[in-house]
Image (cartoon, rainbow, N blue to C red):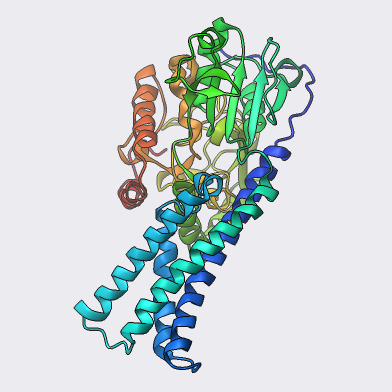
Length: 462
């Protein structure tokens, strides 16, 4: 059982339009807001120091500012002072910023007095600096709301409506695309259509599908595999005014999906990826060159094997591996899983697969942003569980792509790797992937990374 690759030509969906622009503007506003907040805190303590010492600079005041600013920014970031809600409601943003200022001040007080740190600081400078920072923060946040209004116009969100065989009513400033014109249809067995859908919704903060009632279940399943807040229109609830469902431009909508990570989670996960990947590539570069040379000497063909796999948001990407099979017998679609006695595997390939060295080039995928160090493993499009395609075994299969795929993951550290000879092999991996998606934390990523060291050489690695 498989899918038929579509041969129709569809109008290209260009995600780098309004959606991408609005996201870029918001990130710029977050950065500008954080910079202005830091300047306001610095200014508060600088003014207090100058007033206390009659216009002379104070080393203690500078030390205080140097302590307060990073503590404040960490607290403000964790408190979501830089978020959609903070931009949309300056009062909410100010409350979260002032809360972060109070927490930062409490930490500094603890360091100075309870820990008996030898920081020569005037109490008047500290109190005056705190009050000055609060005043400057309030004024700066109040004025910055005008900048936000000019930059973002009527809406902070990038909104997309997909009209599938329905006449979509007016939706204000939302971008509306016709599903048929872009080759988008509720087909759960066509990964190329899913790739088109993933690219269509990329960068959108709010996605609404207007479709026939009988297609809602299929569209809901498709949206769950994307990393966006997905909704389907429910016009039958318009007259009763159902509020628990949600409303958009006066119409009832049902939310059916949401990205598993918010902005803070995505930034933390990406920061960990880069912090570990860049040093790893530098340290492992001699090993990478040795493995590449061994592959070149052992058999003719390229050093790297490239294969299309399904990534975040069900978008296709090219995954890199060290080539471990003979070039003329490489399986581009992954229709045949490698086995312990596979005659396609070269001598060097058998060695590097046994200790997972063939996966090392995926560090370049992580650096590029297609993959993460930790996440559900990406599968080849032709992968089979027994005689069935992966997505035919369980429709939740597409949900696992709501996060970036990983070099290793929860399923791998539990020993769920190797060939999928039967349905249960895939179901167990899928359950582990869904558990990871539903319970993501940064510390869990760290624990999986540490546990991976124990399973680098595994009896199912062949």
